[in-house]
Image 1 (cartoon, helix red, strand yellow):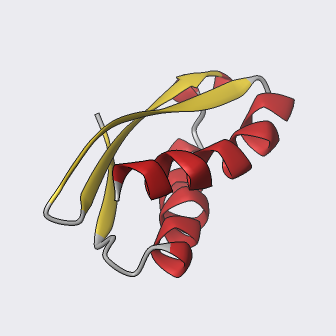
Image 2 (cartoon, rainbow, N blue to C red):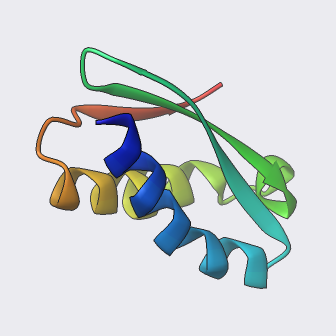
Length: 72
């Protein structure tokens, strides 16, 4: 599953990088995906919305085993 997560994040990454940010995959356990928002995304007031409404939504759509995405 970690490979699928990385592949999906690689498809999301250009949109984040266009705004000066990025996302780093940290770990996955029991369907909980841990990521780190970097660059402009790390301190952005909209980071939680990006995480839940963007990254988590897309990962859940493409990988049904994903239950939640959390920032670490």
